[in-house]
Amino acid sequence: MLHLTTTNIDEITLEIKKLVKNNTALISIGEHTDINIDNLVSSLNEADINFIGGIFPMVIWKNDVQDKGIIVHELSNVVQTYTIRNISQKEFKIPKTNFKENTNYSLITFVDGLTSSISNYLSRLYQEYGMKTNYFGGGAGSLTLQQKPCVFSKEGFLEDTAVVAIIEMKSSIGVEHGWQKLDGPYIVTKTSGNSIEGINWDAPYDLYKKVVENDSGMKFSDTGFFELAMRYPLGVIKQGTDYIIRDPLSTDENDSLVCVGEVEENTMINIMKGDKDLLIKAARKAAESIADQAQKPKFAMVIDCISRILYLKDDFKHELENVSEAISNQHPTIPTCGALTLGEISSYGNGYIEFYNKTIVVGLFE
View (cartoon, helix red, strand yellow):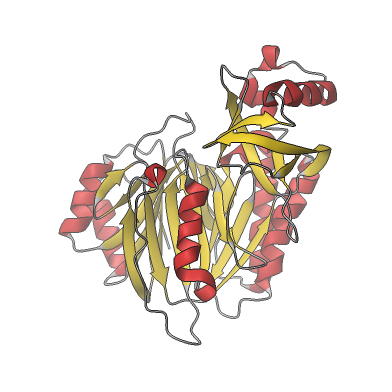
């Protein structure tokens, strides 16, 4: 693994080449890193480096988070890398892959976290590959929540796009969130893309506002929507699994709730509430659940939701410390690094791939 703070593209390219040689680079970049990504892509291509990458609100290096800097993981035994454009249009093909019998595979994907139809993209991946591979990744993008190019590969610096690497490598993945039910259940009666347009056949914002303002003692008109909503996510009820958390980002003129990721019509949801200690304990549990499973991991990767740090604030360092400690107790030479994301991707439990919000996903790869 590499942690780079230089913004000199020639130096970055040289260091990545020295690390990965003929293997593949998985590159995570903090969004305020002062480099031209198009120029970096050109330089990496000229150096004949295979790579995929994303821009994230922050990157994680050991127990620290920064909005500047570059984290590079070396991916060995890569079977295939590819780029899927126009995720929101749903008119794309997932390439076929020849999986060997009795062999462990892991698929890592970075996707534009602010595009629509991410769940459709992940469903298409699963339709093609099923349980032949584990799935791991995150939503790229900016904390401004303005959609713009945020993932990159040899094909360029792109938006509304996903990049993928399939590797012949075993992975152990832990997923936890720590949010608790406040009120519900409710039925989602109308949706469009990432917008919930009806809950119990009524305007979603009216119901959500009443519950949140009553519990918090605060007013959306005083705080702004996201400042208060980040403490009260939605929990999609899934039979046989934990809640899938959805992050309400904003409302619109129709009093819809605009979320990170889709919510299907006729699903049941609860309004959730956070407790800082429970969130931190959940993060530790995610790491502890896999530390014993992995025998000789080559690296660890943490995909943690940016809105968790916005909620935990100064206490977020305790979340990272707990994750790092849980891993280092079993694997003292493995540092924790990764990214703070706009949505988290993992297969977990039943093996099906999910797009999460406000959740931490920890992977050990060996």
